[in-house]
Length: 204
Image 1: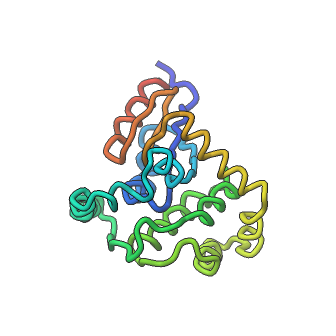
Image 2: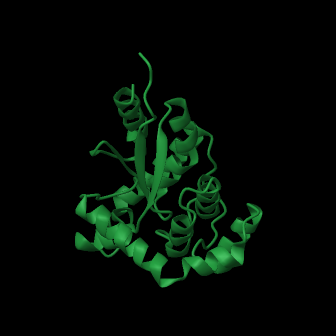
Image 3: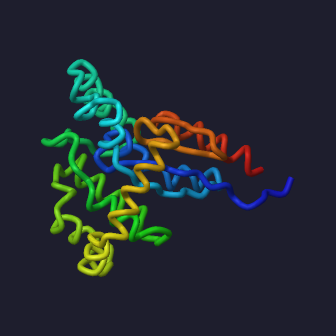
């Protein structure tokens, strides 16, 4: 049977999310194997958690869960061959790089930028909300850092990130990473492969 146009899968993520780190680092390669296009959808988890009455990540609020996640992340990173170091600040604010992802929408360098941001947070333990850190990553990608960071600070981009978060809330996103394929939700890094299989089946 002739394959139709590759189906698009929405990838909702926050750079402060540990399990989003795992997905960011492997999603493009995995999606290519399934002939699925990734639609990168940055949003802020903080307001989602606040709507549940939480003032931080559940991994912080529940000690036992937090201790488990640290061990699980070490195991998962070893499994995927991804470096891991628990950030000294968790969850770390990531407003600026999420805005940069909106500036970079549909640009070929956006996935690599996302990887660099995640590596900076979960391997190098850098402040990913710092203008200097983000500018250095953009320079590493041969992008006009000052111009892009400037665009990320404009009101239209700020409003877009707020809107993204509202859309996530309206679609009942409750954590990250979250994937949507033809309206079907898949939650968690461990469901990335299931989402891709579903997308691949739907596009054939």
